[in-house]
Length: 259
Ligand SMILES: O=P(O)(O)OC[C@@H](O)[C@@H](O)c1c[nH]c2ccccc12
Image 1: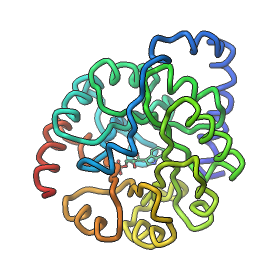
Image 2 (image 1 turned 60 degrees about the vertical axis):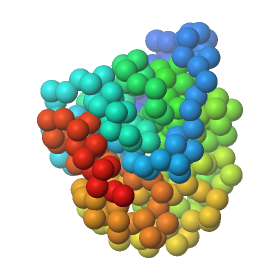
Image 3 (image 1 turned 90 degrees about the horizontal axis):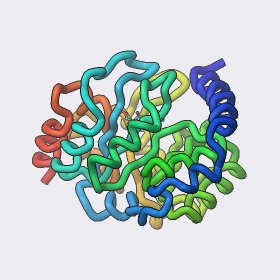
Image 4 (image 1 turned 135 degrees about the horizontal axis):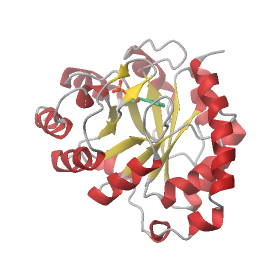
C-alpha cells in the first residue's frame, strides 16, 4: 500500500463522519456560499503566476513550520504579489484544517485553493462554504469519470479546478473542458522523489487552452526561469517559503527577482 492509498483510505472514512456531523444544507447556509469567487486560473495567467502554499508539515518532510499563523502568512503572501494561495486542509498528514482555509479567507482577498484529497462532492461544498475559490483534484487517486463528475460540480459552484498528474496516463485522463488548470506534480506522491524534468516532459501533451502549473520542489528563481520557456504560467511553491521565518517576505523577494 502506497502512502497515497493510505491517505485516500483514511480520507474516505473521515468524509463519511464529516457528512454525519454537518449536513449539506448547513454548508449551503454559510455566508461564504454566496460569495462571488475569484478565478485562480485568470489570476495565474495574468499575474506573477506564483501560487504560494501554507503547509505546516508533510509526510515527506515531517515538520516544516509549526509556529506561523495562517492569517499572517496569507496577508504576507497577498502583499508579496502572489497570484493565489494554496491551503492544505488535511489534518492527519499535513497538519491543516478547514479552519485554516476560513482564517486565510478572513485575512486576504486573493484566490484560495483548497488543497485536499477529494474523494466526494461533499468536500467541494465544504471548499465553497469555507471560502475557497478553487479546488485540487489528484488524478492518481481518481478515475476519469470521477474527475469529470467532481470538476463539473465545482464549476457549477463557480470554483476553478486544478487537476494534478504525475505521469502520462494520469494527464490523459485529466484532459477535459471542465478542468481549468492542469498541474504537473514534480513530486511522485508514491515515492516522494522530486524532478523538474517531469514538468518539462509532460507539458508537451497539454493542449494550449489549459493554464499550465508546475508543482512541488521549486526552490529557486532559476527553476522558474527554466520552466517558463516550456509553457508554464503557474508555479506552486510550498516548502521554499514555509521553511523561512517570514514566508510573505520570502515570496516578495522571490517575485522581485522574476522580472
Ligand atoms: O513544498 P513544495 O515542494 O513546494 O510543494 C508544494 C505543493 O506542490 C505540494 O505540497 C503538493 C502538490 N500536490 C499535492 C497534493 C497533496 C498534498 C500536497 C501537494
